[in-house]
Length: 314
Image 1: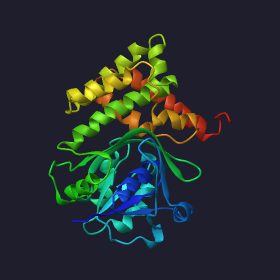
Image 2: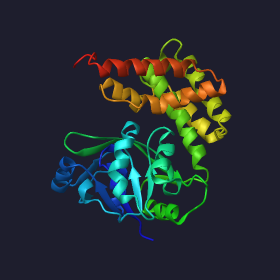
Image 3: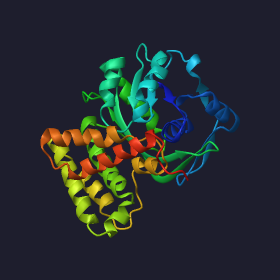
């Protein structure tokens, strides 16, 4: 089965993963706005980074031209854009077409289920450090490029296998998960810890480790998050704990969360979707909420300042 894949947008995440699939010969079309379409038709889809540069001629479609002729929609918008993104992809979501969201957080699955039906929604997540530059180049800044996906009921369905077949031809790191919900909660634990720490202290993990009280703050955050997802019914696997401990306790680690970088740039943020969700779970399960609560308050105060124009201008 050759899977016809529609990618919403051609920015950092969608453009990167869609581009790598197209590079490997997958049937990929990008649903883009007029300006980005003109750019792609003129210059091609361009990726630059440590895993190799590429320029591709890619298929594009506008919202007005969209027809129900796809097997899978890759949804890579920001979580706060979900409602408008669902409206855009709706013409494709008929028949056997499925949607695979690669958004941050967990709450979007319920929203997608309500709009398109749970049978049409695959579960997944991704990790990539890639950004769309002003000149249209997608710049990858590290070697991370992982997609994890699967069916919530854990079945290896034909559509899941077809997407796995497409990914197998690429250089991407990917996994058709046996228990995708566990994978998602593990990532949520890691992501919200990174976001809470780097947003609260406005610093990289390495800088936090080097500061007085930094290692203790990191340890408190990690332990609370592990306890939250454990009580939620998804105790993290040893390798997941080892990964997050390795990342968040590594001296000199320059990593920051995208949530912090968006704040630094004065952009909209996914505070409710990343920090808010985990904070709600901390309250529900009676887990230490100190770090999550302080970080969430910090982000919400930023949102208030941004909303009424009180952010400093560079």
